[in-house]
Length: 431
Image (cartoon, rainbow, N blue to C red; front, side, top):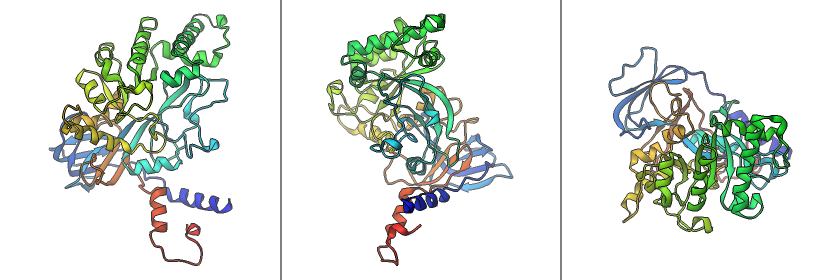
């Protein structure tokens, strides 16, 4: 145990704090703005302090700027993970390191992940080194269908990961939701409506709240949800469940709904588009893992996009606490899908937007994050080539205009064991 502590302290010491923000000019690269527009060859990106101040092929480089030559390389906004639990889970099977849900808590909607996100979790540095700079971090559910408040975070090597706390409320419907509610979809939907009604009653007269289902703290937490001030992320996969979620607007017209998962979304894409409800969709769910996924297809996102749905890539229940870096592979696969007969994918520009500006816009952060437009936060990644190709490597990452360390646990383990020559002590003793 003492040995583990020594290694852990040594590892954390290697995560040196990044230097202060400065004026930086990244020149000569193939620049992707991230808004769905085509890449620009030989372009320049200028960062000042923590923001993008200029992008284009005719940008004047400030005299005091630190120049980075990106000739022959790609320059993009940082990847924005549309749904994750990064920073909440270190080892999923070890309860002491898993803060994704509070299965024994008496609270539900009042739970707030901002108090649990760990910027020192190993997965944060691993995904930062892969080009992921921001993420939607959501709780999962415990006893209730409501999981609590999620946050928008950055993956910077510092002690302040929260970009926006209480950014949304998360609720679980579908097969998991009906188990949480008592064993049927009937129970899940009536519980959902009942809890929202209880919260609405509380908003009108707190003295009238008399519920075995909803604590006062939970009722207060739902007030900005029913008023439409806070987004409600709803996990639902089957076409039938999606339609029922859209129907909530009849009784709660102010709800700012976002669908998560939506594996059968293509079947009701016209309804989703008409309701103007955005989707953070699982990119490659193409097998009937359960009865709510019988019509899953890799063409799901492409078909929803064609139908006019605002859609981006999320990774719910898909190693969402550790492997946000799969986002680039998933986006690339959606591009390659266009070569499969009768399949529907995305263009390259659409695919990259689905992991950059798309999630930012869906979460109401498009004016600040997700692209290299002037005024946005300085989240920039320099790649050796096409970021949607698996062979491409990350060379440099900026978050809020600050260059980040790419050191991470996997890299250090590789260096420790790449030389098999025996030493005085076993390799585990190396720092």
